[in-house]
Image 1 (cartoon, rainbow, N blue to C red):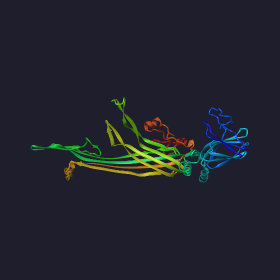
Image 2 (spheres, one colour):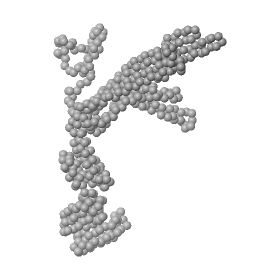
Image 3 (tube, helix red, strand yellow):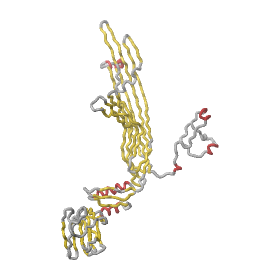
Length: 475
């Protein structure tokens, strides 16, 4: 007949000792420094304990190396042990947690020690992985109240798919830790062309009047200065001046047309799933507060920060499958501008004009993404003059000014990703391959910077003897 004895001590939790073959043995525990609290069988440590993961409401069969006499379960609320024969026991998971179980023979010798970790049943998740991702090597393990995914997959997309699938099957309140490694992570090379063309047209026309008209005892002063508020008097100090009877008139007229072209062709390479950035431009200082030392004194100095501007690029590629790439691209073209600039303490802080594009697409390796149609057309026109007089036919032009500007901008970005493959060293070339300095007579008399290896359309014997790659040739 099997008996159970519950023992409570000041230094240990409740212990259940099950004795077999109709005899009970009293057991006590040892204190933290190893002294026995009473005469009893020795309590063994768990250094040689076998770790066994077990699902809730699942059981395993344990075959013992000898006849069992006593069974000790540290926490029967987590797992329970049922002895059916002298050398076979069943371990049953009750709830999520950890406990340990010891088996002893009739002489008190430890037969086996088990370290039990009861987790939720994960066999359903493992079966789903085998059906949904048969080529992946994913190991599913319980981790406290969550799930731990380990193993390896072929691509980051499969890793994300496994994480999403485990999160859905685990349900709310269960955390999923993704420890899956990607075998042979691909690298993506991105060739980018950023092209921007801006055309500006500025027109200014006005007459400055300055003088005094006298009629008998009466006199009047005429003053009319063109403000040109849009373009801030780009022709100040220049013009045609004429005088008549004390009145001076200055004709100020200007027309400007300009084209600005911006081109950048960066090439970047990044590991699948990682980000890469590129900036072709510069940084300008911005005042970010004032610091005084000591505080409250007049010995203060401005704190300066630097802001970036130019052609910037940020991209994050993810290789989905063979030849397919998910690409997140953020490109930006910015430049310094006087519009919206701030003047403080005699220091002018410029503003930035920014064109930015942000998108995520899926394209094949070698395919191109074109972000075009980013066109901006801005027109400003303003008339200033003396009320009433500026509306006179013909003569009204003497009392008004016109300030006009038209700005057209078009930005286009071409992006071409490639999955990087290994290349032989002999297939690599440099810009200076094949370059050689011109001889002194050629440099002095012909103005050449490099040596030429033949002329198109002619059979040059020196060209036949030359071996090697040719880089940039300057004429």
